[in-house]
Length: 521
Image (cartoon, rainbow, N blue to C red; front, side, top):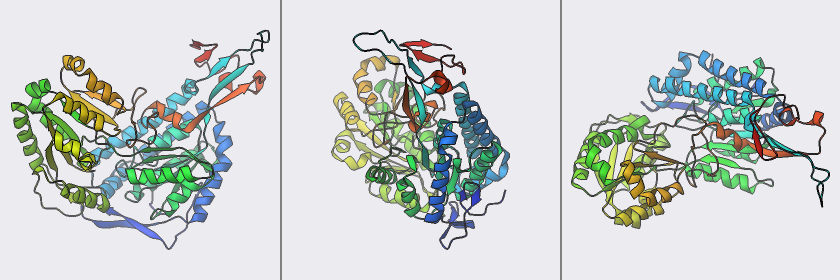
């Protein structure tokens, strides 16, 4: 499948505009062909108009038909074969094996949502039966369920060219909800975006769905992305990226004549708390596991542990030495973009307490892994030490007082995750720590590491601001579909005019809440 550099506007392709950009190979810093053409405002508006024309029809598509569509997207992505994997590696500097796994995760996510909408009970159907004889006021017939919110703008993530980009979790959950999607491709991996975009567009055609169900926009700079959020046909936004970028979109969306929700995943340092019992018994294995987590994907995971709180014990000194040695022998690796590399170097240079770093010769967007250390008193007094540094680095914070440990937890901003290493008995002894962390994060981990997010029904990938813009949702798992829906109630409607999910005979055979009692079928 040829990469042309042109946007996908419904079933048409964009024009060859004068505003162009290229991808770069992070390993060398060299430009990668071809040129990509930034969409015009006219093309963006056309995509939004097509989405609006498709909105009602697509919103009425049955769960079985949406499931067929989602599975077709997954099949089409897999059919791209090695060309997709090789292009992803070229545009990111990450190994082929990473993208074999990420492609599998992406397609599994699409099929997970296919299973969900085919099953049908995700709509939370509720029926309150009427009672015309009730006094003093007759009780009406009220039935409600989740319905699609409208067109969703999805901004691709830099660090997940497949799983959180064109056909990733935001797009899959929005399409599953019955919402048209307009994707703003990430400039760092536009070739991957075009290949996957063509796979999605072809699935729209194969399944006989309206043209405006999907569009993919290329853009240089911020103008087109901002205009997308401002467009009145767009009713929600999905974003994965920096706090600065997410906050900018939140402010634009809030300033619209009709404000819309922005579901942004942004900044998180994912603290790890190592309790004395764990340090005493497992300091060597924890050091190895922590090193693997900090350097996974060159430290470019949103769940990378950026702060590690340590007890002051004899074993801690050995742990710190071991971890520093592992960091020192870490191979160099390019970061995804020149901007990410420059920011990594700038923020790292501002920290004065480096205890170890690798010393490799660098080229392209390469960086060396590093580790810094401070004490609890200094950390609590300097809020800049809590800032996320995107890349292979972390900060060790030594604390020898229980109250210091709790104060560190209280001081933390909202996070995606927090991890505790200890014993089951520690969980009872430190239940006050757990109680604090529960208010700060979306996922608590015991004796593990935050990198590696399981995709399933129970997963929560979210957290209080600035980890996300709305801590009531999850960007991973089947709950993600609820971001792009709203409840609609039907009062005193004749049975034949109701959606199948709410009809008396329950033709879809789904679980429903009827007069406060959950029915299986």
